[in-house]
Image (tube, rainbow, N blue to C red; front, side, top):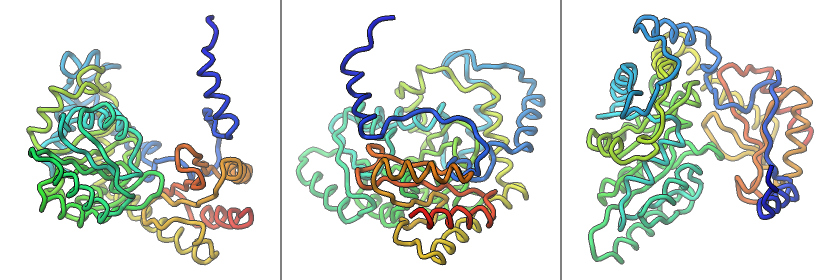
Length: 385
């Protein structure tokens, strides 16, 4: 084996020095306050059974897609799923990608053209940043959830450009590290008035907000003012993959130019069937019950935070993501380890994933987290803080 490059070894050493070196966790039986499986769908036996039954009904017994969707991988279930997604999310079209990362990379590296301008929230997801970097458009960030800063920067840039340019505004409906939400209605109105293209990543809102878990954009009834939505299936839907929702022309453009779509093997039939089964389950009585339970759990958690006078440690959030700020990588890691020893799985989020001084415990709530678990977590947290 050849010698490991010195520059790479130095970068690893710096991470270790800053107590920020990542490693893969080991399977355990601690109480789940860390996964994105907000509704418990990833382990739902009914969805599993319905997935298998759907494959049997369709006469599909393939393990893999066998090629990209543009070659041999576009099996019939893709069409079924994309039509369902378009109808469910009130969009003209849907195009399924292999993951949320693939969808964001494909969209943002492809759609904004040379000479165009992209404005993105300062806390936007890494996959969106990476996609923007690979594209040809100019890009500028605006202060987190600050629509006045967005307006000022958008209008200033437009006044400096003599030629007509397309301006894209990018945000998330629920931010993955903070659990908070922008003023989407105001943002949509601003973009519509100015002729800008609004793109909303709904990864952490689908399955949590809106009728049957349709997401925050539809709950606010602004889907017609949004140029594109990215919905992912690896969070509350409990599966794998993602889709870009938009116009028929946008779908046509992406399947012709998005490299992360064109040059990759498609999802296997089982993965696509599981998404269909999970979406169907969202509208069933048991699925609706899990949605209601999740909202109850979120309200309960927030009330217990207040009752224990822990508000000063937490960011404001009405989502399934609740954030306790604990500055310092070593400090927050030690706190997470203490909670794990108590049988509670809560993940520490370290810098540089978040800004230095904003290290945190990211507490994910689920429909299956009961009152006793929540009270126990918060009591232990208070004692350690």
